[in-house]
Length: 158
Image (cartoon, rainbow, N blue to C red):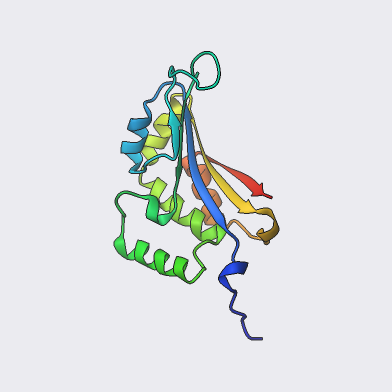
């Protein structure tokens, strides 16, 4: 049986974001420790826009695609991921999670500190509902999620 080439249109759009919530940490400290710039963040104690009062916790959210990191760990790895992205294969769930988790593994001590201080760390996996084909999370990915104490949340967009 011959393998079919999928068009880029049939490759599901996958977005993986890292979310950190913490009682007091400064968002700039998170950005510096992880080498990522947030898409959205606010600090505990800052005025809450559109509501009365202040934020009760720090919130920090960033995309963790290969091109999001300030400094690559291994240029050859990023180069191969970017080539795969151009061919439409890098948006697979497994590849996006694997890359992000490998990068976060280098910051394991920082993530532990966040959790020890009462914070939480989550990966948000967003897929278009109509393009969400079946997928499997390999044991290596689930083990790494557990080791790093990261929750995986799924969001299926309409």
